[in-house]
Length: 358
Ligand SMILES: Nc1ncnc2c1ncn2[C@@H]1O[C@H](COP(=O)(O)OP(=O)(O)OP(=O)(O)O)[C@@H](O)[C@H]1O
Ligand SMILES: [Mg+2]
Image (cartoon, rainbow, N blue to C red; front, top):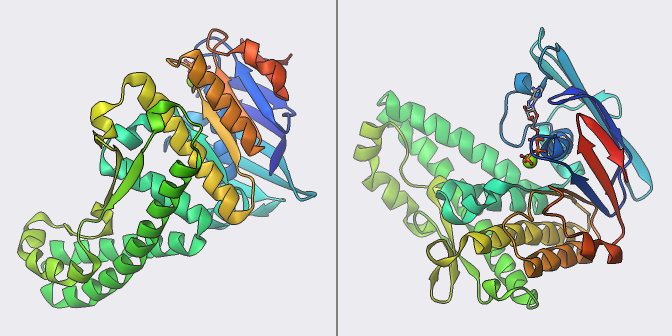
């Protein structure tokens, strides 16, 4: 999938913005606060229908304006698609259009327009709460196995119902929701187990990575074993009634990232965390490519800062090997200009709300 054209109107810092990206590497270069990340955010918004950082649509409107508009044209296997987003503050209504028809579900976009977004907060996948790791795997698996996305939605809904029952102390209704929760937990847990193995295989496959990644692997740590779920739900029911929520289930699972000698979060340096986070997103993109035979758009925000030249070189090499279309933001100081000769690319200089292709 290649993004051929991007247009923004009154989107955050930009009164108007228009580019025709390169099918391979696109570098957005500019000083801090110039609007580089904004370009990547707009692409992710168009492809998913949602702001990546859960930002309210109102904040995406340029200060002093009443609405924003974003559009792009994509091409895959010779077929063009047009995505548009319109948001009017007066109506507080976001309209998503695919080829001029209303998009009715986010799943439709998820299936049609895969993308991977590497952001500075990605170190949280390693150092943050289990929630960040669940998000990483849930997103990855949903792209590769859309049925998993449906199971997750159903699970969240069932969990909400069970928690409501707990809050109202309607204990007679618990058995019904428990049964559904156990069934869905089993399916989701097995799929998670499978994809942890798959990603561990990919870690092994990419042998030519920096030393930081030798013997890195994920371990799936479910909140309870699938065969014990029923016993655990019953055992915890008193506690759950007091808390008003369900304390066991796949919403409490974790995925630990370790070196042979211990957890990555306890040993990785700042730079190693940064390159490791990039690497996780890189493997996410590779996995989507391998399993779906589709090419996700790869968005890389500020991945070069804090990294040494060896790591920067490796990143460019790896990203280049995928053959994906890449959108990468960096300050002039962070972009390794000496490495760009060997890769097909376009540089877009950004300053004063203007974009200049170089
Ligand atoms: N709704 C808005 N209207 C106008 N300007 C906005 C709006 N929201 C954010 N901005 C401005 O957009 C700029 C942020 O842009 P962005 O995050 O894309 O910068 P950047 O080039 O990625 O910077 P950095 O190098 O620091 O990461 C800031 O100057 C901010 O004040
Ligand atoms: Mg930025």
